[in-house]
Image 1 (cartoon, helix red, strand yellow):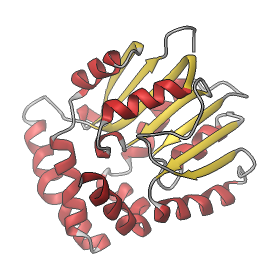
Image 2: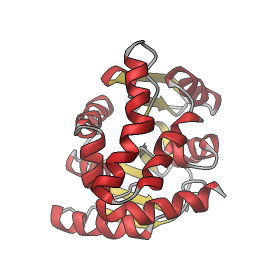
Image 3: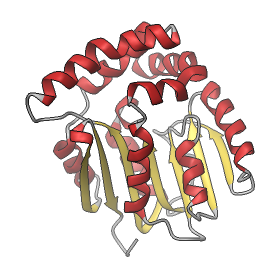
Length: 234
């Protein structure tokens, strides 16, 4: 079962997760998240939910941008434990609450948040459409649904080089730096079934989001998708 396997992967890699993100993305994940925050233009006093929040980097960034209430949710207690420590160290614990839960069935009321984000988690869920529907449900009319995730470059020869790195070299880095080969082999496998940038934008529209924007990042190795819930302005 995919969900159980993914849970085991993230429970296993949690202690080295932040270090490995820096290594395998050449620290670009920080720039990608900063770009996402600029495009979101988080308004002071608003609320946000960050799904698959992991060790809470994006959760903390949302609070630092001025969101008055930020909820982080993840199904891995090992990841959340690291996230809790980072939230405490950030001095933002009064504005951030963390929940152990499933992105497929959010324990929140309809129209509860101004923003719903998911960073490098959408490709790991059992049903990405269900997660996007849940994200759409819990944001207010005019609110933003935002996904930042790995993607698929289309330009050759860069695509061939990227495929070589992602499918063969990255698992070796996981073995060398985190003693986890199979777990990091899972990451390229998860991307193989994940829709490309344009396909994912169409799925955003399918679930009812409007004004959908899709941005390729670093030559298309990652992509940012933003959609607006009908009924108001973000």
